[in-house]
Length: 183
Image (cartoon, rainbow, N blue to C red; front, side, top):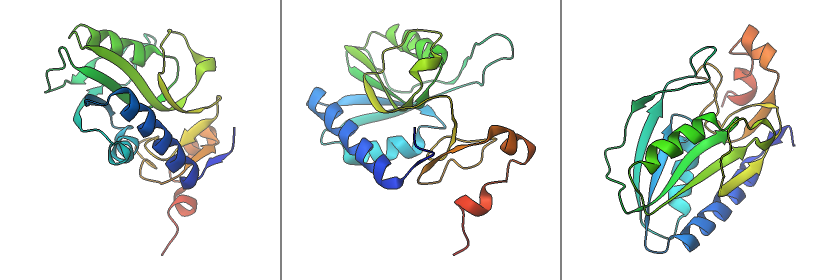
């Protein structure tokens, strides 16, 4: 895995994914974004689609310590029953969150339900999830940027960096000068 995903690499992946989704959903679809990390990716993806999407969001809690469980904090406002749905997330890691959300959305009986992620850590799966639309396969590196944050920082950068988590735990602002150069 590269230590850095440059903006050009991300743009190419978004264009490819938008083409695949547009091809598979020629009559439109509902895109469901998982807040907050999906925002940069979803915004770029929507602009690259050649079909008309309906867009909605949901939000989940962080994992509760020792449980591996999350809960829904914000639900959809759109009725997805009998409609094709693509769940959009920034990264799929253990699969626990993706599995939870797919099960939750499946109860609403969409006509189809697929998962799209910019980054996929297949090697860390604890719960089986099928990522239908995948930007990049990644390893265990700790990533920040383009929606991926550390303590709320770095989501708005246009590239993604593999970083030393211990360094950021010690100083969450350690990458500010590098990622936000003075203009």
